[in-house]
Amino acid sequence: MDDKDIRIIEILMENARVTKTNIAKELNITEAAVRKRISNLESRRILLGYKAAVDYKAVGLSASLTGIDVEPENIWKVVMTLKNMEPIKAMWLTTGDHTLICQVVARSIEELSAAHERIAAVEGVKRICPAVILDTLK
Image (cartoon, rainbow, N blue to C red; front, side):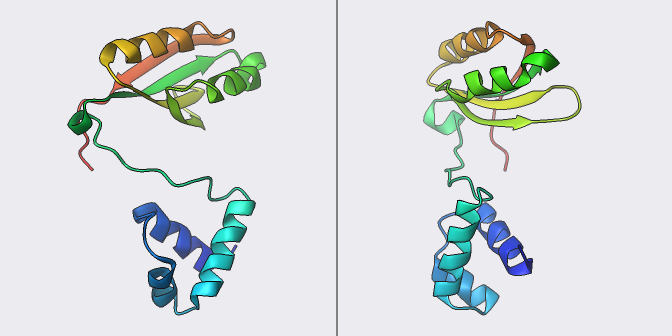
């Protein structure tokens, strides 16, 4: 991975809908080169997908960033279970206060609360600490 790959990633993080032509112009390379680089980043699982940034409040959804404390011996079992839970949209292994941080999105605060209860009930989960998103500021 070189500086051009890093710049492609930065551009896509800013706007995943940017055209490959515009990326090519910014990097002064061909569109074919951009396509090849993006394909390579995808196949190496560096680019994992493309998602919409949503103002949850504006569309009537409820969301949280939920810290999850896990028994160390069960970490991968918990990860595999949570990966398959529909309301979990993203998950990160972290240092600091929590083992995992999950982005949880539901149609209502009640559904969000139910999702948190299901997460808490997973074998190996010691504690969850949901931070409900009140408003999107950036």
